[in-house]
Image (cartoon, rainbow, N blue to C red):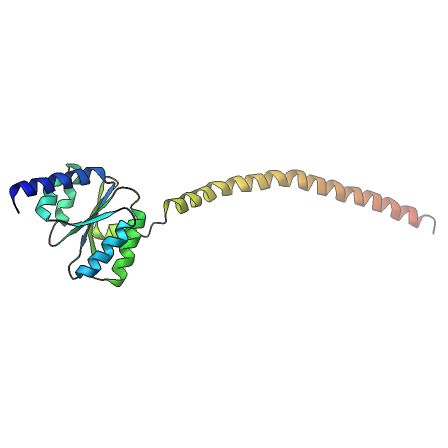
Length: 183
């Protein structure tokens, strides 16, 4: 590869490293061309690109904040560039890795932080954003529901107590009146 070609690739990678919210590094050794094509197709459906890149060229394209990724740039490596939500991408890659054991997460740059391969894999288990927001709403709603129930209980209990008292008085008066004529 010529120096000018390398410069173009480094520039392209630099732009990709800056513009994407997440970069997932994975070891693809042992996957066939057909399997890699299948993975690329699955990820493309999510709006993501997977590229096999030379470690030296990727190393040159890292920003200052991304230098922590250098330790993961060893051996054959594929970089997945994720412009948006990384959750669906990680879930898709994890599902693929379950049937293709050769695919391993090496590391990643996600939301301005470096993660190792194990941490990247565990991020795939996080529920989708919508589900997390629903869980948050239900947790915040529980104390309010309990407060409303407690506030409603006071007048309800008061009314029930007054009704019971009224029944006792009216029932007690009838019982005395019924007992008096028979005496």
